[in-house]
Every structure is written in structure tokens, then in C-alpha cells.
Image (cartoon, rainbow, N blue to C red; front, side):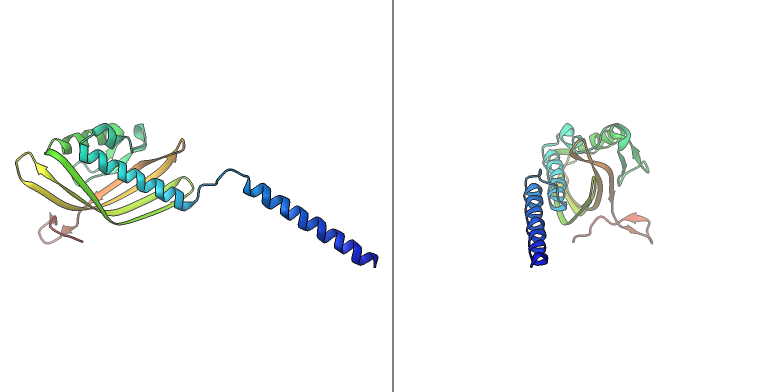
Length: 177
């Protein structure tokens, strides 16, 4: 009889401890999940697209990490851009080619994140009117590595590319998904 009482008492204590532990866990601050991070990373790309549409260089650059943290590979020379200032110059030259808004559309977007690092890749369509009067409509491949810096997701690496026809050595710019 006493063994049964001891076991019942131990069981009661364990259930009580488990209940207390669970209630303490549910009162803890919300832990960021991968889904939260991925939604924040998608919002980063959406902000960049809106800034492009407005041709807002400061808005575009606001999605990038500060200083020399950025390394970018674009479809134009040079081989790489080191630092936010160098990439900003590239964007200014790009924007100067257009008259009016530049529309950005993403397709087949995938976002992965773990901890304070994430990656986003997508097919990116850019359309707009060039200063020459010609309509531009171009599909690119875009990959960005993002890092959470001071609680905010920022791009630390961009890689923009197009396929190449190895026979001609020229970029293939007329592909559609």
C-alpha cells in the first residue's frame, strides 16, 4: 500500500511539473519560425520591386546590407561589384537607361532560411520603356543571399544571370518561363 501511495505521489508531482513547464513555455516570447523568416524575406523582394517601379534608388538600396558586406554579380561588366556603393553606381546606370517606371515580376520563387541566413531565387521579369523609345521585356535568373542584421533581413549577395548560347557566345535574352 505504501509503495502505491509513493508512486501516486511521484506521478502527481511529475504531472504538476510538466504542467508548470508547459505553461512557462507558452508564456515565452514568440520564437521566429522559418515561415516567419521566409515571409519577411519575400517582403524584402516585394519592397525592392516597388522601389524599382518608382525608380527610387534609395528604396532599392535599402534592401542591401551596409558598406562592404555586399558582393554582387550582375549581367553587365565588371565581373563583380564589391560593396554597396559600387552596386549603387550599377543601379544608377541601369535606371538611367529607362524612361518611366520599371515593372518587376517574380515567378517560381523559392525561399529558404535557417537562423540568420536565407536564400531566395526566382525568375525575374523586367519590363519598361527605354529612353530610345523601345519597349524592354527581359526574363532574368535572380538569386540573393540574405542575412539578418540587427533584426532586419538584408541582401549580402546578388547573382543576376541569363543563359548563354555557347555556339554564338551571346546571351539568350528571348526566353520565357
